[in-house]
Structures are given as structure tokens and as C-alpha cells.
Image (cartoon, rainbow, N blue to C red; front, side, top):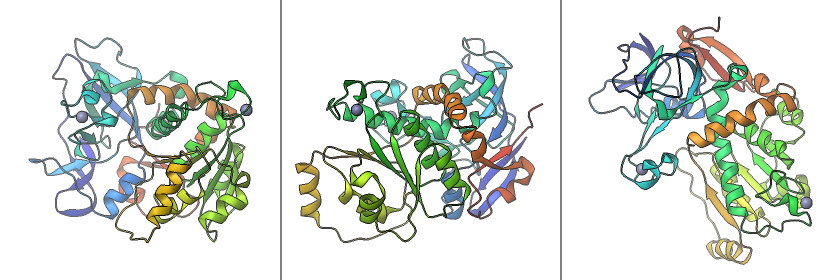
Length: 379
Ligand SMILES: [Zn+2]
Ligand SMILES: [Zn+2]
């Protein structure tokens, strides 16, 4: 069967043949892939030639955001039947640490995990995949056309979960007890800056707005670009920060600098670091963007440590997601799309067939938000 990814020692994207996968364990599930969406990780893997192919293999299929249909199930599979729409988690645990042994491989303690389409394991840019039932999440029928966004939304769900879990350390953020970080209406009376309006920044904006957070989302594109429109469609404020210093960005444009949350989703390391100076007392800053290469900066270490200590501030990194975050994403997905007038559908700006894989990874203009690769069209 056809697969698209990288071949050892050869830069760029290639098509190659993989053997048809087979059910080998009772809990295995065979899935026909319908759609895959490439993301920043895939673009970076190709741009920087970050080949991470398993020993003994000559190629790796890319793609880790997918939706498919169950084709066949092993004898021990309980929750899925042929015909179910499904999506799949990405990381496979190390099998050694307690988080991995308890379905929380996103918090792996050893670093010996693998990841489909990224780190040692074939991804989903192919016609069929097999995996264990525990990594496969059922998609409700009304969400199949959006479900390719489940994985990126799950990344953001985890980021928000980190914020709420950590900030529940102080319930009295405002005079309303119903606005505590543990409550369903936790976003009331709160402000956030989302840095970056790529898919993760837009999805973070969506979940913050769903919770009622006064949200400011910044990016380098102009006010009339599709990304800026999508931000505004969700009732958030768009800021073109192309000529704005981080301090000015926060003090001048974002709720008079009284930000409870900073959500970094751009991977711009210099801005990310400078924004620490702009944190409010007791606030939290979650970083999800992953910078590439090196960037050396001078910092006043004493000032930085003093500020974090004296102002009870939290910096937290968040990567990957586990099954629970996929389930949260599928719970929120329909509401996000209907509340904000089809914003998720509108994010899917470009579509290609699998055979057009070379076009998928060409450089994109500001009109691009997210690409969908149709492995097999919906009938
Ligand atoms: Zn582990
Ligand atoms: Zn309040």
C-alpha cells in the first residue's frame, strides 16, 4: 500500500510502499485512514531533515493527526466495531515508568517512548494502520468531518488542564466563587494572551473563549488575514505584533497588562522568554511551542528569579497529550464549532489527495491555516 514520509539518507518527502498491516494481537484494530492533517512538527521534520527512523527500517511514514474508519477488530476488542469512525493517540509509552504504565505516556519519566509519525514509528500517511484498542478513540458520527483536528485540540486541552490544575492552588482569583479554576465557568473575570495564531494558537483561543476568558491572540499576519478573522470570529481580540515589543504588547494591548494566563503557541524563543517579564502576580505561563535551532540571549538572572519567587508565578511546559485529552477534545469540538459559527471547519483551508503529497509541504502564504490530506474521500 502507498505511504508518504521520509527515506533514510534522502531529504524531503517521498512516496513508498509499505506492507499491508495485519491484526496480530487480540486487542489490535485495523483502521482504514480517511484524512490526515500535517502540522508544524511535520513541516519542521522535513525542513530540518530530522529523520528519526527505527533501527532496521529504511523509511518512516509521516502524519500523526488522523481520522479513519475501523475495518476489522481482533477477537478481544470490546469498544469498537467495523464501521466506527476513530482517531488515534500519537505516543506509545516506554513500558517502564508509572505514568506510561497508567496510560499517561505524555508525562513519560524515562524519555524512552516512541511516537507515530515522529519518533521511530510509522505515522498515519498511508492507507491502513493497525494499533491496540487503548490508543484508538471513537469519534461520534456528527464530528467525523472535523475529527482530524482532535489531536491538535487535545494538545490544547492538556495545556488548559495544566493551567486549571496548577492554578486551583488559589481559589479566590476574583469576588465570584463560581470563577475558581475548578469550576465549569472558570474563565469569568480572567484575561489571557495567546501567542501565535497557527492551529494551536487558534484552538487555544477557542477553548479559552469557550470558558469565557477575555482573550487576546497575537500573530505576525495582518488584521485582514484569515487567521485574524478566525480569532475575531471567536470573540477574541486580534493583535498584529509584527512591530510590537513584548512588553508593549502586554501593557498596551492586553487588558492593561492584567493577564492571568499567557499561552505560548508560536515557538519564537526570544518573545517567549521576554514575555516572562510581563507576567502578573500569581499568574501562569504555559509554553507549548517548540523552538528549533539555537538562540542565545542575555538575561538578568537575578531579576528573573526574584520576580518568579516574589510574585508566586508559574512557568510550565506542556507537550503531547493522552487519551483523556482526546476524549475532552471530542467533547468540546462540536460546541466550539457551533458556538463560533463553524470556526473549526473554516480552519481547514487547504485540501489535497494523498497522491498530491509533494504540494502539501510547499511553503505557504498567510492565507493558509491548516491542510487536510484526503487518503480516501468520504463517500
Ligand atoms: Zn515512560
Ligand atoms: Zn469573577
